[in-house]
Image 1 (cartoon, rainbow, N blue to C red):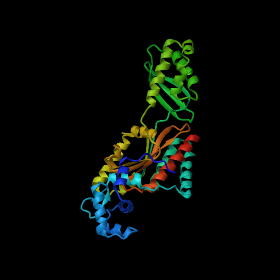
Image 2: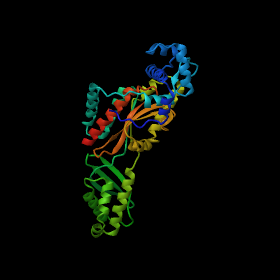
Image 3: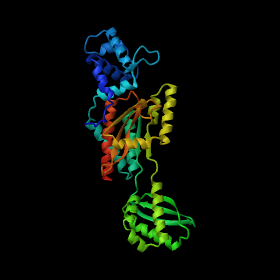
Image 4: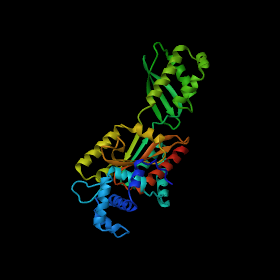
Length: 362
């Protein structure tokens, strides 16, 4: 069963205000709109209903729905389309989400596991983003918190009297370089001593864990290191940790799907602006923070999230976790507001479960 984030409180108010007949007409109007992308007229709805109801009677109900702000007439069309508030009500109160069928589950698992075999988590996430794009015909989105490297080795190389390069080697073979400031008067032998001391203490730990472990041995450290070397160890670790806390990793696949489905030039401009903002990584930290507190799949429609508000897009997101059940990222689909939510929500949810399982193994 898909775990959905709690609904908007206004949804229950709309349910109470609408008769069963009004709810049925509204649901069919939204489902047809999602299917075709076109405003829906009263005559078309009257033909869809199980009960005999004239187009005039349907029009009366639609007028009530319009007064509530659930539907509106776009431009000069005679038909009606759901508003952002109407889509939110539909998603919260009427959306029937099934499970991903076994064939599709196998395909999702097989494809993402293929990316995982390459050895790097980023390959796995690339595969997940591309898969979501293909299954949704929208854009696949993955936002990953910057992971703390588990270190195998560290050493310092002096660049000039005031700076050194710290070379960090991860257990997965990844290598990163950080520039650190050197205390005045630091000798080559003291730099080597600091390098050896850190190499001994960081193996199998992140930088933060290494600092905590070294901090707990302050007396021993005082005996093993002179003051200037100790200062380098402490300040070097602090600056390396600060450099590690960069922006999240962003993977977007299938931009063309979203652009191709956007016909109006003003909408096209908004979609391009959306991708510009995403690439600048504005708001990504907020999405990750939101994912840490959210329970299950989140659906943002139109302006409900400031990052996506200008484009008028809908976004379906689910957090994924590591082996310790900590949220380490979020993945999902960006598409037009007429996304097939009933299909996309379980696909995003299941993909997040697969990614979490594979990251847990690593």
